Length: 132
Image 1: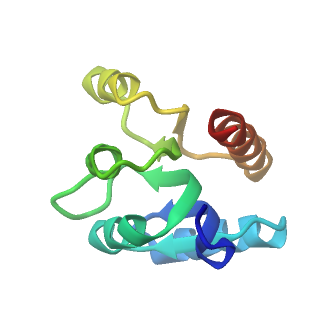
Image 2: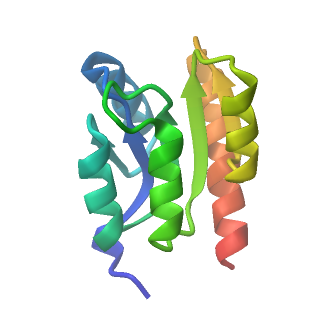
């Protein structure tokens, strides 16, 4: 079993530092153990040595990788986490790829805080049931 000090409830990834901070603060204020990253490579590096139940990722990351690329990489590394994608992207190909990667939820921006919290809690509940 993983060391409890290395377990995180939610890994948040968004290249918009202000939005990243506000989402991470909201989740932490609700009692979740949160780790936040502004770049994809740091999030992937973290995932190689830590465990987290839910990945809450922005789709557009301002780099060569998007949120779905990160999910795909983490799944290839063996991460059994549940993923929620937040995006303003409406392309059908993006939605189909999200389905193929078995994302828990694909949320459209802007997301209201109460809807975000409800979705995160459902994803966390799902992750705990899957791990049992």
